[in-house]
Length: 90
Ligand code: SF4
Image (tube, rainbow, N blue to C red; front, side, top):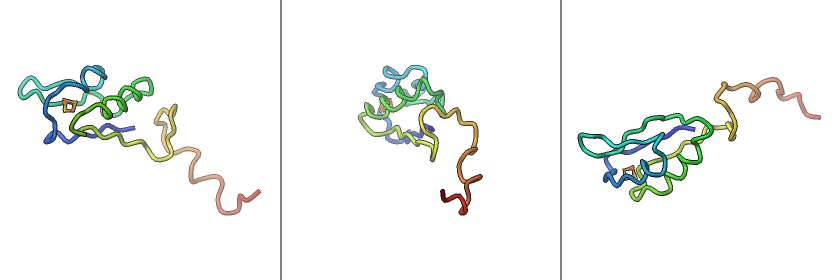
């Protein structure tokens, strides 16, 4: 999972900081969102999704990794695309 933001749309409402303080903060200069963890650990992923859902300006976008289901530790691309091959039909 990756957290992407579009700061130009942020209006500094702070909903993200309230719902996921470990992932977001607000800049002391302009009050706009700052991402603290762009690749959140598994235990914070639900909070990241919640923050994205609550943001009133749709600033936060969650990019779920291709083929990386919940619980994946980001250990690379093992287990996909290799080993089976076109001859692996039953
Ligand atoms: S909730 Fe959205 S608009 Fe509010 S500070 Fe966070 S990113 Fe910005």
